[in-house]
Length: 598
Image 1 (cartoon, rainbow, N blue to C red):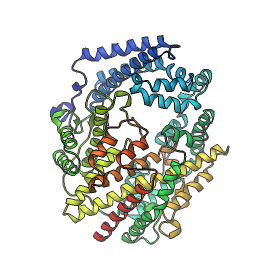
Image 2: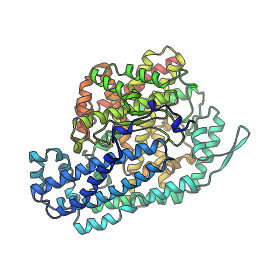
Image 3: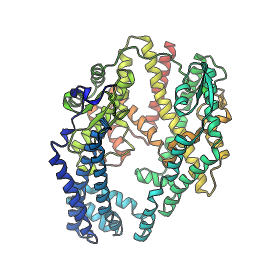
Image 4: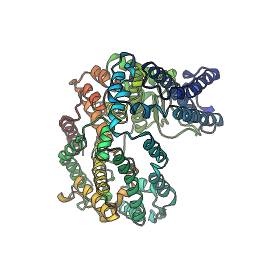
């Protein structure tokens, strides 16, 4: 792999677009530092209109600069982690950020101590227009805010809020002992990387040995792992009870401005389309000729091989631009410019010391987004480029059309624009390829995207919901209970009662492997994001939703409205059955097309 200085600079992003020189960096440090000294002087004065307006403007200006400093340090560090200068700058930024957060910490509790009438008067004041969403959140959380003393006590526990997750993460990645199995004459330890590698083997005996070894290891630690998960969820449920929420789900729905029953509407709609997943499992069982299909076959490849074409960066750019033909001229122009290396948005190729993977950073509000890639000329690289540029276009439009205070879109909708672009690309390739093997690969890939993101994540979410109900009832999460509940969700989703898949009792401890269960009602957001993205992509492609509506209603919205309303403005009502029926229709269509080719 090349060193950083061996990469042509034209393929690197341009962080100088954030700061021209060191003096400009130091100027922002000085302004943020001064704000941290000035903001506490307003304590006890926030019921005065002019004082409140002044401190809000000061704190948000400081945060805007703070986020730019963070981005500047991180972008430079991530392309070559061996350079100490950027590590040092990152440490300085973290220190100043901590100081700013500490200086501002009195503001929210003080505002929450005031009457709802006063808060609403500020919210409705035209001079506070950019802060309406801030006041919306305050008013929504006011019934769940404690006294100053109680809040201070609760804040002391913030540092241990993820203690059980940190313990689990350390234990699973460093201290767990895994067994070994013989594979192709070699004795292999079946740890996490080996499990991921060999569970997709074309040799069914290898898949079985790997599953048995891996889940036997987890079975040996199930009591400790169940205890960790129990106390992580107990922390969440305790905090939500202290804050006077009905339960943890109510707190999560409140945080995302959703009705309480939204989660169950989502669950019931996914359950209603499970027959389409079962149809896929039946086809897989037939194609692979495994009448006793088991859970150890779930990752087996129904389609061997992949796309044979080479997706060099320029080729990937060309294909993505072509895939976006249904979009507006302006969108396509900005997208093309953003992917052009000359414009400094992207850092394309891997080099020694560069962070692995890919991401988009759009938090530097006054600068264009930055996209990190490690492009290696395969289909995944092209799909990743489309995905990250979807994020970039979302940030570009949000930052360009919303004030800073309303520009940061929530995690609830964060994956919609990126997945939208992925789907546009794969549909374009399916429409244009004449290679039968590539078409089979793409269809199977599309189907697996839906299986793993919609069905699997909803299965996780159903399991998670049962755990919260158990802990909220004052009962413990035992390994037997966890296995039973997880096994039941696996059985329902994978059609065990219809003979489509046999769930070995040993594999029911898969719950112990999933870190997302420590994240507090998190996984359902993946389901919403994917369904929203697919609904929008299909609607834009067939013309039922104008591309301008997707751009104006969604990409430009930032966090200016509740997320479910933003999706509705773009053309997707997640509270109706329509998007779920659409995803079932698309899933069956892709399955039918694949079946014909097979």
